[in-house]
Amino acid sequence: MTYFELFEIPFSLQVNAQLLSKKYFDLSRKYHPDFFTQSDSASQEEALEMTSLLNKAWKTFKDPNATLRYALTLKGLLDSEEKHQLSPDFLMEMMDINEQLSEGDPSTFPALEEKLKKIEEAIYGPVKAIIEQYQDGSTSHTQLLEVKEYYFRKKYLNRIRQRLSN
Image (cartoon, rainbow, N blue to C red; front, side, top):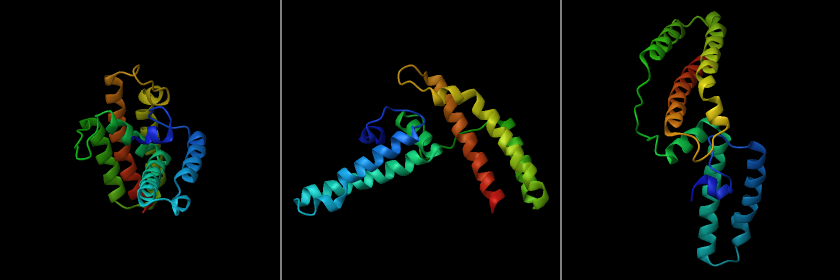
């Protein structure tokens, strides 16, 4: 059972947060182990498994990056061990930012954060419509590969942001 099936929502690259919260609380009540204390051991075990799956799904869906990773994995476009090759131009730009960050001058950090924000906006622009308006069966394989490229670039940007905040 996929997380989408569990939540009874259509496959997408981003989920509706309001709908998700309502579904989560409904399913939490349905599968909560406390409601199965008088049931047989098989029913109790199933309730525990469903609660565990529900919590994993909830955690994934609450994080847009994790949702994207999960959706791309389901589509067979992402492997957990994959070493995706980013473009040399992007990597050079990231190397420049990393060098500035390594110099450790905190006065430059706000400018670096602003630069990262602009890069993120630039890489999101081409895939925004694909992510926000995804339609199973209508979105092409090529478009999903563009989303995959975006995912890896954003992942790289997030690692730099973590270094900036430490």
